[in-house]
Each structure stands twice: as C-alpha cells, then as structure tokens.
Length: 78
Image: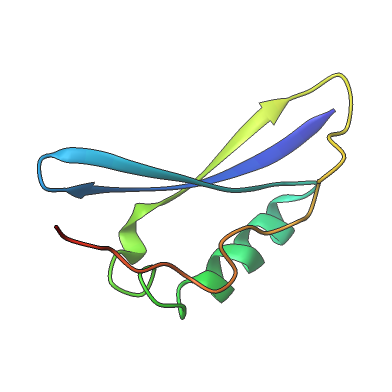
C-alpha cells in the first residue's frame, strides 16, 4: 500500500527542527494538508520546509489522513 508522509523541516539556531505532520492515503490529501498548514502560525514563516514523501506500508496506520499541528506552532527562545 502506497501512502504519503508529510514532514516539516527548518533550521533553527544551527540545528534542524522536524515535525511529523501526518500520513495520508493519497497525494491530493497530503497536498491539501500542506496548503492548509501554510496559513498557520510558524508554518507561514517557513513554508519551504514541507516535504511529501511516498512510502510503502503493509498495513494502513490507524491515524491515516489525520493532520497534526493544526493550530501551527510558536518558537520559544531562552
């Protein structure tokens, strides 16, 4: 079974930050999730960080077509 994994990566203070966005049953669903998240806080500043990767799975994950980080994110500096 071919699925589509969406990740978001960006560089922060010399290191890579990564967020797992979700695994989708179609490329269209993955692209729709990316388009929605591009408007959210944090993601709107790092829109080039989205990656959609085709993956093969024997079994369908329980949380397929569920998007995480739907409210965006805020970067905290200490």
